[in-house]
Length: 186
Image (cartoon, rainbow, N blue to C red; front, side, top):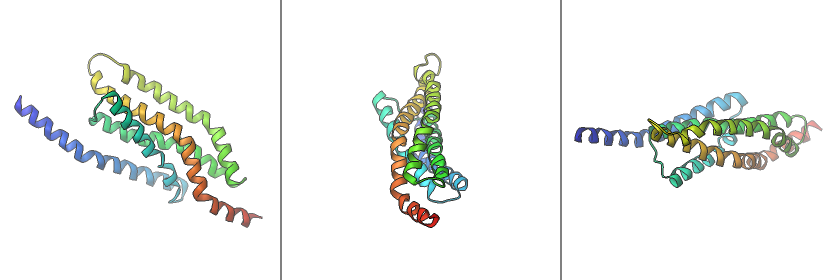
């Protein structure tokens, strides 16, 4: 029994040591994929802005419900990076394409209006899928619950804030470039 406890202690220490590395690798890979998709190095910064918002929600709900961080929940955090980035991509990709035809502010408002439904539909789908993880009983339920908590907390906070923070940051930092582009088109 003592050998098992020693093995679990070293496993927990290794998890604590490797979890930030897994998170940073997921973030770096996400950044590179987005940069290649948009052919720009600055757009991924806007698109990865919801990640800290998701982490705050995930960790807050984890603390509130008393579930701990384990291997499964760390994998949930890595998965959460992709999920919340997807929502920002849905919004910003549409706005960037519209910026070629209309002013930046109008493009962002139209993108938010037209992309709200797909963002909410995909978010609700993932949230509904996470309900059995949260509410499940039976064998192994205690291992699946932290994953459901991470997904629920992260998606709720990031979805609500993504719809406001990403367009606001994009507008604040890109309006100068947009004005120059509009002046050149006239």
